Length: 118
Length: 108
Image (tube, rainbow over all chains, first blue to last red; front, side):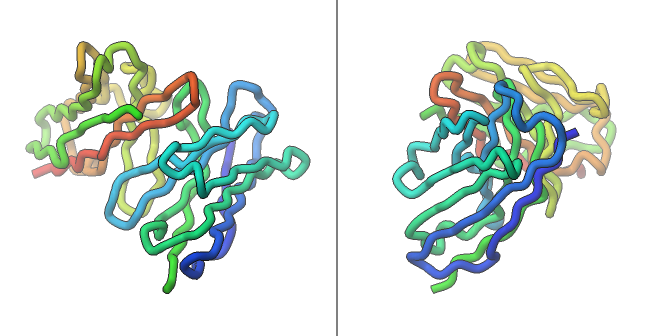
């Protein structure tokens, strides 16, 4: 069974870059059919997909966030990362890392709240 | 972009059947997945590929997909089923994931 754990600052200043890392445990990190992704959920609101990356390093982004998002992968550490630039209060959310297989988000991290301060 | 529309809320008495819909253009051509999210927790998939159920999910949960509407059906609802439910599809070309807005299930 795969386990995912987010890590990173819980507070980011407006206009700065939000950076989070997801550490993956389990045996499926190198499976070519998996995509390693990020989703977020503003307080009291619904889920939004941010983007994902394959083991080979090909990244895919939500068009609405594409200009501000970078997802990268470190296969040696079994980690992948999210960077979201020029954050505003609207980027305050619980950020989840998650595994996407066959189009199904079948594993989620516990989530980490990131607040943007002015 | 692909828009998925869910009712904001669904209410049902204990023991009754809850049906949560997810509308999208020709959604029957896509594979729909459903997630349950309880307060303070990460989502959990309860139905995938329209109607398949992961191990550990009770058979009270079922799914269907036809025309422009996919439906999650929960029979014999109890208080433990109170949660937000999200539908989701995947674009195989650009790997983008689309979620519905979520439906809050209330057990009366």
